[in-house]
Image 1 (cartoon, rainbow, N blue to C red):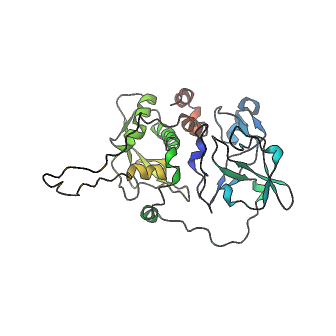
Image 2: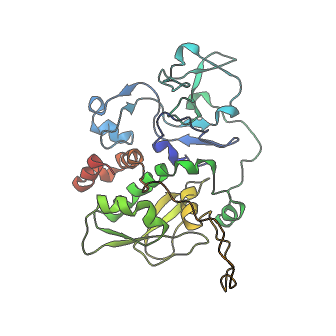
Image 3: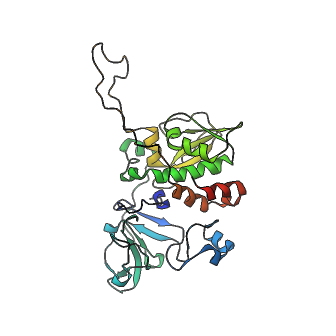
Length: 316
């Protein structure tokens, strides 16, 4: 499956579910693991080669291409107890690879399950050997994804993270111009943040949703889903600029889980009162993840432009 976008942030001091579904895996092209170095110790050139264009935390000197699994899918390993450090509720991988092969006793990966961490195992790429196996899960087309409900998943409670990632992509696509968000769920999700980040004035670019089974409204920028298996964006047919969004969050906006029980036509009969539940309302205005916003910008070469660097430094 495509690398989950939720790696861009976590919720601190909260136990997280497994990042991946059982029976699936993903490959992270970014380096991961020790040695950890500050960006000023590495230099801008090497940092850019490793996909980091501005300071954001520490830079990994570990290998690229770690293989991510759900912890319950791993077999034939043991925990290296002297590397099992964590914050309070589990292991956070701070000491480097903490899993060893039961056969050869060499370190093969890192398990993380502490609070503030996605539950995941990262296998070292040199420890993974691909063997003949049954065919992988067939890639579903968009029609099948919508029909089977595969776009709605258990990570929907962490919607601020993919929203922060999408916000960063919108800001980059806008190129510093004002953005006018079409009224509706997209405006509820990103409207307040875009007003705070981008200038007001003439020449605003219109932002709206588009995608399979939903349509393609007239707009300059279109929030479109990213295929959860391949990582490919749904492509609009017109000349609008597609802006990638996590498919589960996109599906939540395009096809809200709340459905009214009112008749499709004609309304309620006279004397019958409406008794279907109202849609849920949050206690406070929605705020995209600022950490995910900066995480995404830090890995975008355009952040070196002065206007975008200023937004990165300010955050959302």
